[in-house]
Image: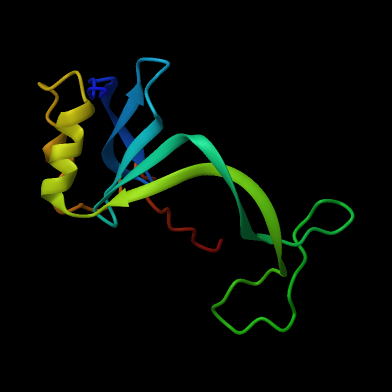
Length: 140
């Protein structure tokens, strides 16, 4: 029977403008490629090293490689034509229960002094670096 080894490093990060944390592998035998806490859905996304093939909807491209516009798309929906493509992507899983997230992190993180729990609080507005002040342009 094998034992679970702490093989990931906790680091602070950003995702879609929100402060968050990630876990990155430190050993070759670690089964995970990356782990990310997703603040807007309050879930831990686990990306495994092994990949799986699956069907995904992708924008249909024209001869120049540009997405094709869907003239019949309902207002407020995706404006591009789409097609189903077979893609190889990392297998992923999600943990939503806060206690299970904490147990998982503590099971694999080597730097247990890192305060990852501050990122699990209610997300605040996205981070905007150096917002520009709007300027009023008056006619001459």
